[in-house]
Length: 162
Length: 175
Image (cartoon, rainbow over all chains, first blue to last red):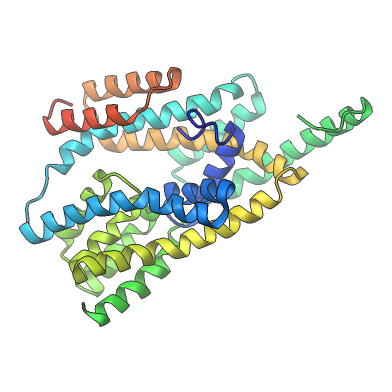
């Protein structure tokens, strides 16, 4: 939504901010809110983004806490959750397709994407291990690619890469 | 208010905040151990229930700590636990974001951004896959998931009304 509707971030900045938000401790959405808030309005923006993200859910969870602990009525949460999950999975997969479709004809990117997927799904490696193993080679490949581009660009008197 | 309980909420959750690499779900086992076995804040069955509640409720996954805090010391317990779980991680993220943004445009920043992008995409697919594996979807569930994937991929429709509708359908046990 942040990328499509508001056009606040481009795909690449979105993915790097998302990776930062996932690697660092804390809830991913909250970290992402801090990134976006800080990116556009500094400390105040970060605080506003966190408060905006958490205030209403906090009040809702308080209502659930009250209902559960003080009236011991377990809400039909599992059923609701089951329905919501179907959409949530679709949402995750569509985000992958949207941000990833441009890599379809880029063999290096496809390889790293597939390795990350396999390491996470089939080897069940934790996120931090996947990144520790795959980031250094991915960084080196991208680095060499940029250096080569820069040299060829400089040759044609155009130094801005990509 | 119970000052001793409030203090133990602060000291436990502020440490857990910094340890919660990969989101708060990664520290749920430690949370369960401490809250149920060490402090006896709640029973194991209650912990399972509040985990389900916090997953189903909208908002960040770490709201489970507000439920624990509420059980320990009511409203103030919930507020203090949530703040203790939020502030340390958020401050670290702010610091790292600033360092990351300050370097934007530099060669290593660009290379890292380009290198990480396909890995991030692979991990997004992995999280969708993992949730689907654990969700034990019905055939109708799979159809809805596939339809939503294509819909959100190819259109710019807001997911919120569809999430609400799916929640209602789930509640009616239609999914």
